[in-house]
Length: 493
Image 1 (cartoon, rainbow, N blue to C red):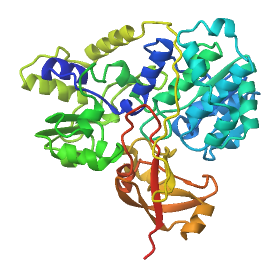
Image 2 (image 1 turned 180 degrees about the vertical axis):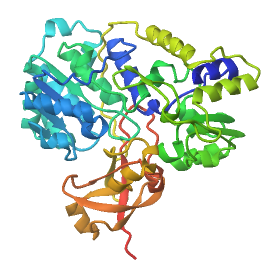
Image 3 (image 1 turned 30 degrees about the horizontal axis):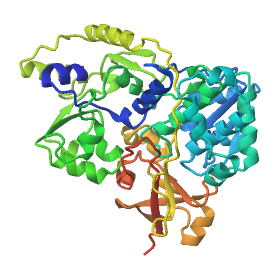
Image 4 (image 1 turned 90 degrees about the vertical axis):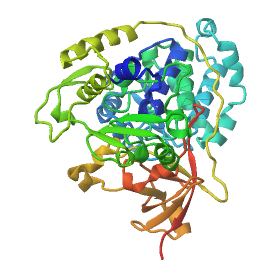
């Protein structure tokens, strides 16, 4: 309905969503590598696999059901290789934990492929006919085990053993997550992982990258992304004067997106800002007009889950006050503007959705290797000596769930995980506040001293609006990981 409203009523192709930080970039990379418009995801994909490689992702936090099936596969005999800087539930149950430096996944994947090629652990006769293979093979020349070990921190023996395990497995699964709540991976990571799948001669389904939230996949399927040549999220929220008015539905960029001070500056300069949401978010507080929308329990309709399955939703309580389902608000706006958008019921909308999904599921199989070089984000320096890594917290999704009193009892605020050795050097103790600064801003968080994170890196989440963690971050523009360099100081006194 939003896509129709923008194209038929407003006459603009300037449309985008939070998927631009994650699943839209994933889909673009998979399209480049496999020629597919839609990628098959299955929560049961781990079952029956001989080897599973998890790349720098805490899937137990982001997709708990998927993670349970990974652990079930491990229980049934699969070798579970987890490449991660931080200890997680999956690393604790892994067959092999590759402790890598945060944000070095591309180097790791290139190194694994270099070993597979040098040891002739693939079908060269078939794979070498794939488009782009020669340039891809040449691009791996410098990714020797020795050099990759220095970049990632993984011992050479671990790299070689993992490459051999993957190449010799009868069947395997490679998985990772890419979303707005993580900053150590990007489109380049997906392309490198896709290269590994192509090198091993596997089908695209070997690479499993589930969409981050309910309806993230749905937004991509419905075309909530910029038309070629028009403005997307980067321009609309980060470029002063790129647009003069904006309507934001069910999203809180000020609390959730990186470099929040820049976003606030752009939003405050607009001639008109309309926010349509179920609560008065930090973004809604800046709006000229706020349109109250119905929550999930107050409306009929459908959601599209991480597997791309459409799931029916039935209203169970009445809508409070003046709030309406989002599609009805857009319909009423269209009529008020003198335009007939053509949809007057949920049933009619459902039929249009089915037709749109059929159009986006056209198959293709154009396999292409893409050489991917290591491009680093911000690297630690004397002034900013730590790498700040952003991760999800299991109990929360986005920022709206932080309004839940029940979840608040479990995790009520953002905290900074810091290695115990670093904490001693900084005179930081558990549960005391620290000052965290980047080149874009300064915030204060409560410290959690732990040996679950490596020295030189600190971890936190962006779920909590009052934590303002996104004030430290920057917008990733080149497909690379957007690791952030920070300074950490004790806030005592």
